[in-house]
Image (tube, rainbow, N blue to C red; front, top):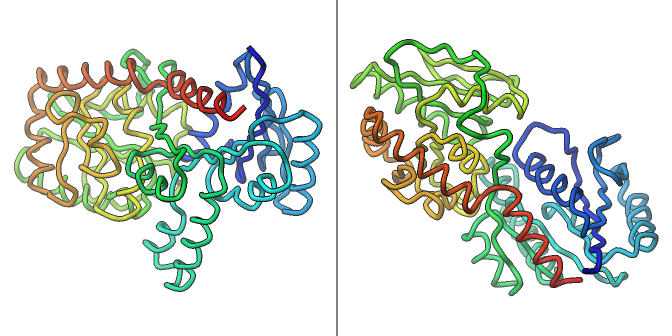
Length: 361
């Protein structure tokens, strides 16, 4: 089989401890390890020792574009992968002035995030939408993180497939050793959350729900594993850990009995996917998730997790109370783990990406 020559562009740092860099890292390390792929990677990192061929970008668009064009010619690149729409500045010239095919690896819709935070005007939002739709039409193929996003983008590009988040079984598994950071109390049931405190994560709702849960049953405790230096205000009686490095997160989650994704009903959530969902399930823990962000495409309620409608506090509390039973927790956790092992490891996801790249070669 002919070796696939791929150039990857990421306009950020792989070393950052957040969702998108972690996803890109997970994909690139597996592509780089394949003998049938010759991978060249361009990022803002000064150096990336675990990749064989890395070039640093300077965020000077013209200089970076010259560097990228030189790499495409020198390495006879078949396909260029742009991670997120932020690479459009590079991808459009590549589309118009080289023979390389272009795969856009979408992670989210930045214009929707800006709208949620009120940092974009209606005119700017419309312009961004129009410009991006033009860009999507030019790409040879697109991958997204959710089926909902795929349905949206197929209006502009018929070659769009979903690559949900994945999990690394070496990191996220039910047998990993504890870090000892979570303070466990005998006979208590620990609810765990891991991630940042951005608006679409729903932490204020979780804090309010936990306060109500304490009025019903004080068996439950809540632990928040933060990825940020500034900790969210979660109220009294909540353990907040962090910030933790990515590799340390599962060693804290292993001490939790239930894991939760409390996302609200927003446009950002409707068209995105929480990468933490697959990692939570890979821990062999029961996951309670809002029925948004395509969580309902992965979780089958009552079989491999529990779902509730976003913002429905009574339903969320009912899920927690149902999980007082250790038998229910073990059954849901077992099937969650099976789902990941059979469908959602990063090795499985990257195999799908390589299959798509082959069709573009």
